[in-house]
Image (cartoon, rainbow over all chains, first blue to last red; front, top):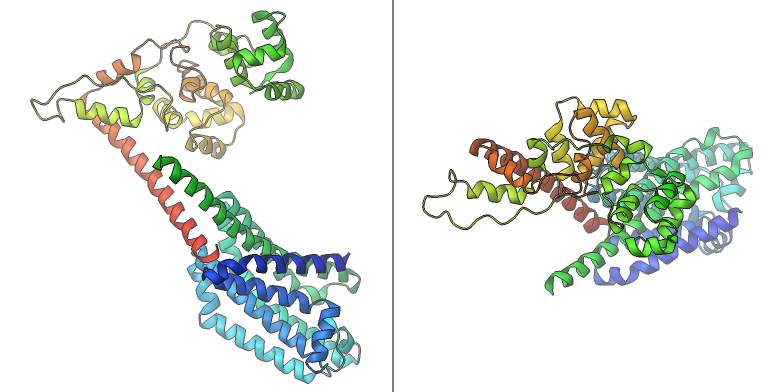
Amino acid sequence: MIDILQWSTLAICALTAAARVPSAIRGENRSLFYIFGLMTVAILLSIEAPYVAIDQALGGINLANLLLRFIIFAAIYFVGIRVTRGFGADSAYRLITGKAGMVVLLVISLALMILFFMMDTAGSSAGLAGPSQKSERNFVLVEYYGAAGRAYPAYVSLVLLPAMVSAVRSRLPVLVRVAAALLATGGVAIALTLLFPVVPPEWGAAEFVINYTAVLCFVLGLALIWAARVQNRKTSSAKRTYTEK
Amino acid sequence: MTIPAKAFQRWLQGIAPDVSTADVCRISGIKRTTLAQQLVRGKVSVSTVVSISRAYDVNPLAALATFEAYRDLAGPQALPTRCELVSQVSTADLLRAVLARPATEPAGTSGSASPPLTAAPHATSVKNWVDAIDDGEVRHRVSAATGVAPQNYSAQLTANRLSPELALATALAAGVGPAGGLVATGLITEEEAGWPPGARQAALDSLSDGDLTALAGDRLQALGKVLKRQEQDQAQTEKIWENLG
């Protein structure tokens, strides 16, 4: 079940990224292509088999996990910029790119790296499942490390949430409002990941579902806005030819 | 409110005995699947009844009055008030009338007779009609009588729509002829509602220069607001597509 979710999420991300290639070559909103590309790599790195393969190439000390965290940070940072710009959420934009956002990003990144290098991280395994079982100390460190890795995405998505909620209620085109609803759902899901430390271990599957729901909501939301634009371009060009006759 | 299928069948038997449903659809220009679906669900729409009445040369108002929910439409029709008549003059016609008045037209250029008014309904006819008969409390009374929330009622007016049920309830709550709302929503024509021919033109002509000009000003102001809002929405949408499309 979780396998299906993981691989289908990967497929959706990869397809969306591939679909953006032509417009990226034309130079339209390249950052969207980067977002989809980064998300694809992030999903790839969170699946056991590809993760182990890549990590072995990087020395087998789970550096790939640290890399994954920063890829997620980069992706969510670009999402934050594009979405706040697009929806005209100036205060949210400042909270992400301004001093506050930079401080948050810096502190979390430093914490992430310090925690990572304090751990005994030998032995590739996705989600650091292996190292976490080595010792009590490592288990605690992995928990903190995971929390730090979820903190920045949660910060950005909480900043985005009010703008998305008001966009859903606005008079924007229906597809855009559905997209905003998806982005808001993704944001809530990411914020929920902050609660993982208090989630009982039996609910491990729920953590997976929430993680992938968040990614899927973001990718589908962004793709939907794009679809809305394509649709609008078609209808408006059809109208134009009609009036020209 | 829709018409119960049973009552509809009985009525149909009365005006077109022993005619197959297929023939009724063909003569009245209703899609066969549409009518079949309405009959299956047991709810026949008011516009279906209107179309069939017209096809069989029955006055749609009289036809509707035979149904329980619309029996207020029966009997001799009260003549529309001047406010109602003027509200059904389109903004363009209203502005033309202003320009044709001696008060605004430079002396000596008065010329051709004004072209006939475009038929009701116009682009803001529903809202203008409700505004024309509103004593300030009508919306509350309609909402209390029908159980429709005020914001849903306003949303319909903004979209220049009003369900036949609400149109009737509004007319009753305002104490005007019950058919006025059905004309404003375009369900039936002025003629079918028993409005004397030329009544709108006469009502328009009876307005003083000052009243007419003030009314035109109000209309222009409302139109300006709507256009401005549309432009803002459009600009916001463009911005989203620029950043996320």
